Image (cartoon, rainbow, N blue to C red; front, top):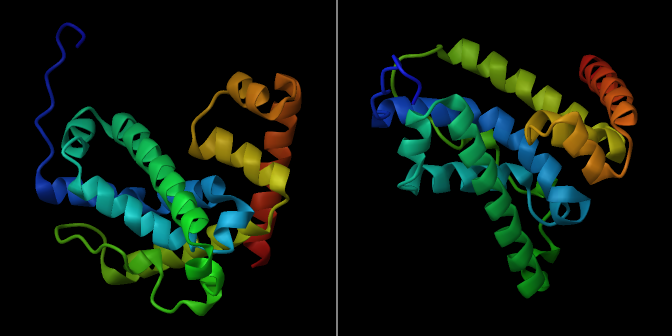
Length: 195
């Protein structure tokens, strides 16, 4: 801790719930990125978002991460999301017949917006409904993007990798990643405005 800094108090349960509730939208986009097309045909990324949030609520390490600030909580949430995706892929692989008939469109009541409702102060129902509809639009737009656009957005925006790290992962130059990222952002905005 830097000199003169005051330690943050541990997050209270309601405050923690509110912090996790605010991560829901980012987590859903991250899980859409991490899931990939093959797994998304069998498991709804919204269900994975719910599972990630539930695991975060149950984890003893979540309050410590939340006490270290939003960046630490997001880093911990990203790690938890990766674990959830790996577990889902293993489940599908171990029993493919169980998941063969499940299509995301056919499953009612699996909207991550309904996943967690945390009590406490915050925006009212009308504001939350508008935010959830906006998030749903952005998520639909993200899913319509070209695979390379989804990948660069996922790595840069959701996983928080630098341009150099993204370039290494994608096998491109850093300059190409910057250019692709700008095009991907523009395509995402255009797709969101069109829907």
